[in-house]
Image (cartoon, rainbow, N blue to C red; front, side, top):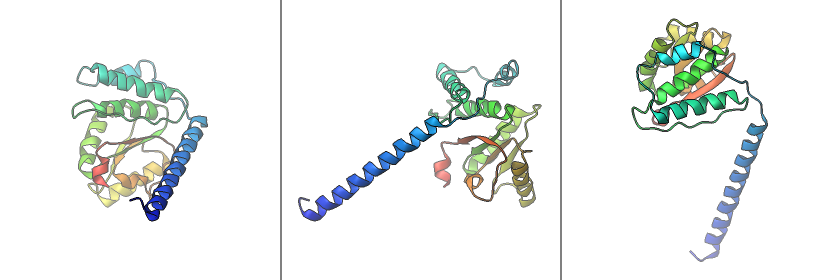
Length: 191
């Protein structure tokens, strides 16, 4: 460990780490300088949507919802990580953010593992039923005709919210006006 090869290897690694840290700092600074659209809850309609949640929000859950709403209203790109145990209500936080973005005319992509695609699609469809929001699913669980229609709707803007796998991030999918990307915490199991 005290030899010259080890010292050289350690110095190269240290330089790479400093280069990566510098690149991350520059990226963070660039993001802070960028503007993003402001998304503010519409009076009345947001309250109606929130009232569709069949449970009472916990303090932690309400804090997470408020933090996301604050982020979306700042006019800066948002990076927010929501952590919580199973049953915390992370999906509800995502639903409220998706509501705000979709009601402002932006598209929302919800990236989930294949096994959760159907469940999240069902949840999003139920919560957005009766609203002028079109929710579609894009995963291998849907037929090729339906998937082609969904991709066309994403490209022409007629699909407001799409729940799908990481394939949504590929070059085969082109969003007309993507305003919010939600990545499910369990997506790391799917890729």
